[in-house]
Image (cartoon, rainbow, N blue to C red; front, top):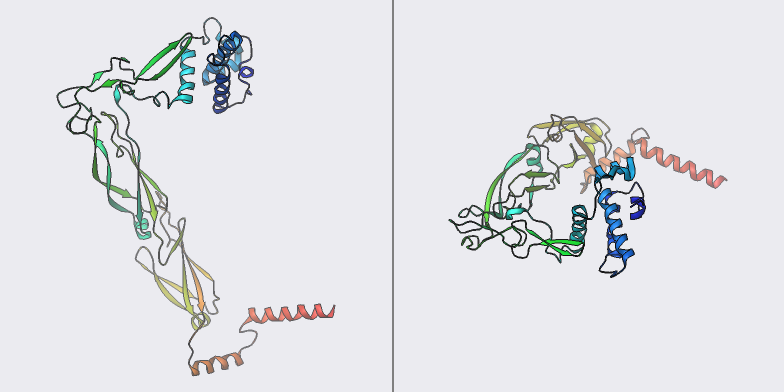
Length: 374
């Protein structure tokens, strides 16, 4: 063939693997011989697009083609209508008709890797601060002990499937076109069991609740994922076990809010304390007491930063900060004497006592006077 491979598939030279596969699927369905019986031109086109896809789907072959063109595959170096043709069409037809043919490929010998499992674990903010060793119970499928995961009755062994010869797949030839499908006898395992294990009924695994210990490091955040390799679902017929993924969620705290490694909290203080100044104490997540000094004239909403009093940073020696915001509380349910004292205080007050509110109303008055004057 002398046509450009990219032109044959109708894609650009910068097309990625997904674009190549999509174009090939569309053209393969369009020019398939079963859809075009007796059409020699369609048959020739079908072979051309398969040859182009066989080259471009392989990174090394594609690089050689981009550099040397068709010359890179002369003298028998290029793919023909043999193994390369069968392999690419088997790939595409398994993708298109996988369910009809019995699903995807399985491991030879029937050994199938177990599925990965997920376990949700909720911890407190204190536990996230200190870290902990948690004990969890996980119900999962584990390898059957009596048959050692083979699925065969103790004392017997699985036999090689006579239909597929242990390959797990059989090939059907239709003219020049070959299609592989999952072996219907062994279901792709490559082995059959004449005398199944009575404990696991030939599955090679049984359901059991396991108790595992999980080390939660200090500084973990909400959504942190911990992987326990080989602690997932047991594999079929002696196959390797999957992994267990533990997803952590941190409970909301009654006092602290977290943002990364920093902690935030709001502390109400009295109007007198805000006016005269003073101090109050807090107890941090590490259990130590922290004293916060309030300067005279502190306004509501002011924040005080306490360095290295926040959360530890995961897998690091760094520690975040604690940000304390004070909210000045307005007194309620005043006695008669308290009201008298406040009224006396109000009479004694001047613009220097409440500079922000005095300045605000002064500016507003000036603004309206200018508006009325204009």
